[in-house]
Image 1 (cartoon, rainbow, N blue to C red):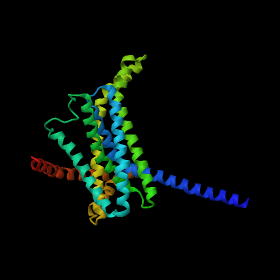
Image 2: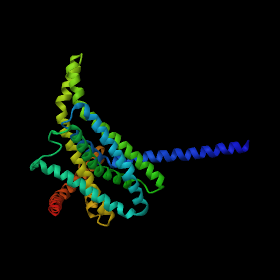
Image 3: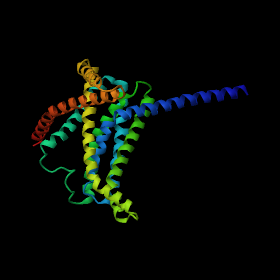
Image 4: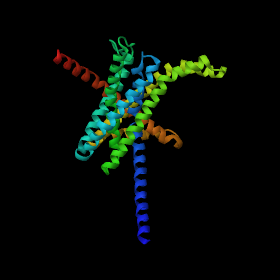
Length: 317
């Protein structure tokens, strides 16, 4: 009898440890996911263009195919690579993270530059697909998954850097939870965005009440502005996250003057406001300065990247 009681005690102790581990995983995943939100917002802002021009009944299947490709990117490729780096080459994480931050800065700055210098030539997201629908869908999905791989790599790198060093299994489970959670959040949001106008049109045409029809018309009329606003938020988030990653990486590598000065300047700005909003103003001031650094870095990178791409095309010719 005493042996049975001891066994129950052992099982209870193991259950407590397991429950604590699960709590740690969920807590760490939530914190890591919050850090990666900037890249995730951009992912949600970018993806709707890949269903532009296709029939309404193909929109959700295309989003679903991209989402499956995204989860494969994260779980089958990026997660194992991230764990290997964490275990055998942790020194490489910060430089790789800074490269990803630089990429976010480049992408964000390019979008800002396009406001003043519109891009020339055809762009996949702005032209209606022509040709065989099945082939075009394959090309669109393949292109979206390639773009997602870059953004997913940044999300996983940010998440990995945010997870406290510990058991590989805990790190792996946390990264997996982040991967699944962010993928569901991003592509669930994309699915709602791409079908919102159809829902609004249905409500406007078939709603029984005038109030319902008015809401439907409001959704249809408001979606272009909402999508434009989402792109602005996504661009700002990219510049903020990219800039903060590079600035923090410089601090880790021994060049912390920029991060320290930005923190001091943000604190000085917060001194000018009431105590109730000091923390919010200080955070916003720091995020703005991080974003401006990201924009400056991105603008420097634009001609460098274009020159590298031109050189690559010339070498292939």
